[in-house]
Amino acid sequence: MLRASQLARVGAALTLIALKNNDKVGLVTFSDEIEQYHPARKARGSVWRILHEVLALRAGSRKGTDLSAVLKFLQNVLKHRSIIFCLSDWLCTVPEPVLASLAMRHDITAVVIRDPADATLPERDSSRCATRRATR
Image (cartoon, rainbow, N blue to C red; front, side):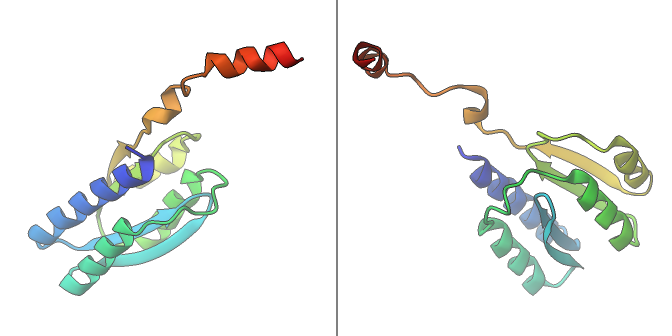
């Protein structure tokens, strides 16, 4: 399963759980910069809008992941104690001081999204390799 579809499923599940519990839901999408921000709201319409955004996630600028920027952004934006789910592949350096200062006020849960293709190499076609060696 691709990372994007896993991300969408987990994000949709968390959004629907919050809707059922009548909780506020917000969304921040990021890559190397903040892509979108939807502040936490309790209205059903905004929850469905966030659910639509999660299911229609598009790839960002693809320059990597900057967790430090999004964590600092959340520190500045969130005024009340919140529960934060950070869905990421976590293939970047984790800014521990920023994460620790954010965790003093808010509950943070890190959700690691992995793609099996990251861990394994594709199968190699030995006949093509032999042909290349023979033509050299």
